[in-house]
Amino acid sequence: MRKLFHYPLCALSRSVRFTLSEKRLDFEAIHENPWDPSEELLEHSIFGTVPALIDISGTSITGCNAIIEYLDEVYTDISLIGAEPIDRAESRRIVDWFEFTFYADVYKPIITEKILKRFMKNIDRSSDPAVIRLASGKLTTHMEYISWIVDRRTWLAGRDFSIADICAASFISVLDYLGVISWQKFEEAKEWYAKIKSRPGFRGILKDNLPQIPPSSDYANLDF
Image 1: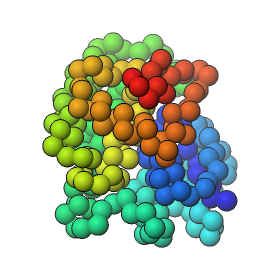
Image 2 (image 1 turned 120 degrees about the horizontal axis):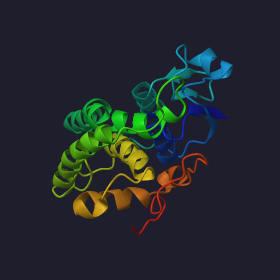
Image 3 (image 1 turned 180 degrees about the vertical axis):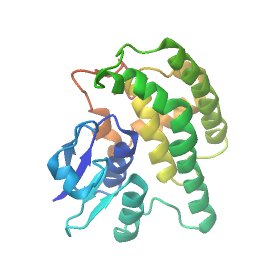
Image 4 (image 1 turned 30 degrees about the horizontal axis):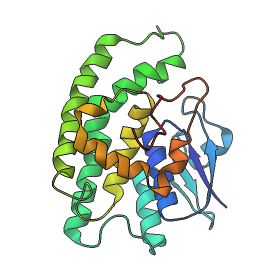
């Protein structure tokens, strides 16, 4: 059985979980806390970072993009990167947007304030409203761009569902879990995300529920 070391509210971990499910590959999900990695994780991920995958062959791969590219090259029945070079380029462009710009503008500050501070030592663990307001303002710009794209395309990178949708939905889903997205402001993006929530490969992610950080009321609701 494959093993995936992950943290449920880690967008990169969710991207790999979503990819594995879309490719219909069975795996055992092993919960790791990024601030306190297990010895088993450290055997495969030198810095204790997630996600980390051990494939059925015993091959271990770390890093979200490395894992997804590996899975797409080894398990070719379902392709998620794109059939043509221009499709692959656009998929990767959108992945870069979320993993770098969206991450810095929105994801990192909100996750730090709402999740990571709870587990940090020797700091003020209360969230900073000013940081959240600034990130929320930038979130609006990103959501408007998502709406603009999906108003012109079937999926984010074009006609076909791809790693672009997987990556974007994984980041968006963590913020949705925390209840920080006002979906009524972004109707086109909401329609796209509703399609994501209806996919069988996303069902496991919608079941996430951490006792110390419960999900927002509509997180798992398909008709939100």
